[in-house]
Length: 392
Image (cartoon, rainbow, N blue to C red; front, side, top):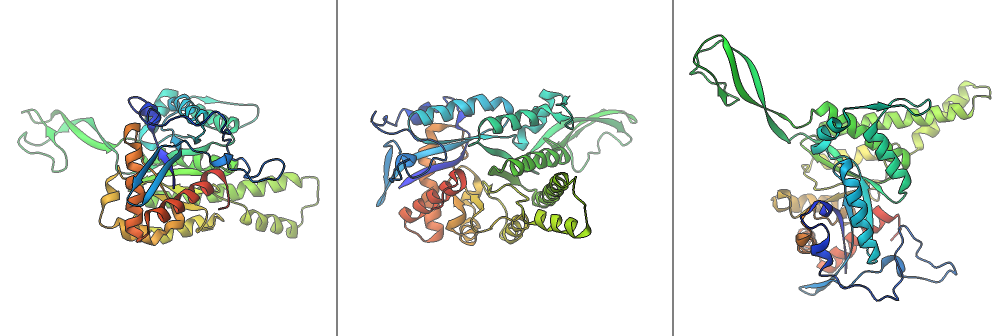
């Protein structure tokens, strides 16, 4: 059974891809090379298996025999893009499936914005655009098989910052919420530590919505990180759906500028706009940490964007993340269903990748009361649909 790692950061590991590649013998030189999103039939109409060729890194787990099929490499910051390109190139040279994923992770958004100093640039008559967003668009246009990821919202990534102010209380009194260090005089400047989000949520939401809308416009799948920010996520989905709806209406009106615009025609345009995809064509909530009650609302929000909740929305659980072992996780996996689950590791150290892929399959099989072969086959089929647009 083939295992495809749908979400990882092995380009950031201490030795990159090497620990994994060292254990993978090359394919015979006569083997055909895999090409992204290639058809399953040759030009003469005959069936071909070249699109799913994999090198023989195989491990037995109970009665199952697993084969490494490839990976999607997730960016976290624009500086990652060349490393992502390099790892994907190495994998493809060895005839593995590999996907480039470009985007800014919420943990590194403040740093990315600081690096750019939020510099604006104007192209022709377009609205001013952040350079990071222009670079992301350019990368996606140049790589039509790339997806958007990892992007998202994080309400639990905290940092401590210095906080200065006036102390009007005796030095032996301490703030209940902060570790305050005060001097012995009243009405003097004090210093203490204050906890704050690593990146303000408003900045996170703005960047997330920009990247999500870009994915929708270019019709690219997207991998999303959400931690303790589900309310903010639903707000952002509302914003992007409305922005895309207005975009379609505006485009329709531009095409009809020379025609008489009756009320009936305007109404028809608006109805057509509501049927278009208002969100990215496929959405993947990786390392899912939501409670059971979040799931129905999330699927409904995606459906409002004209996605099919059964075939366009996916979820992952990484063994490296604590939620994988949480008591609630098996029940949530059952609620999600095998048809929406993707296999992932979410790790940087490639030396752990293979072990975590197997742990992931076994964890899903146990939670869903499935044979590991069935779990592996189902998640590989889901990866084919999500990343390569193949009906399985």
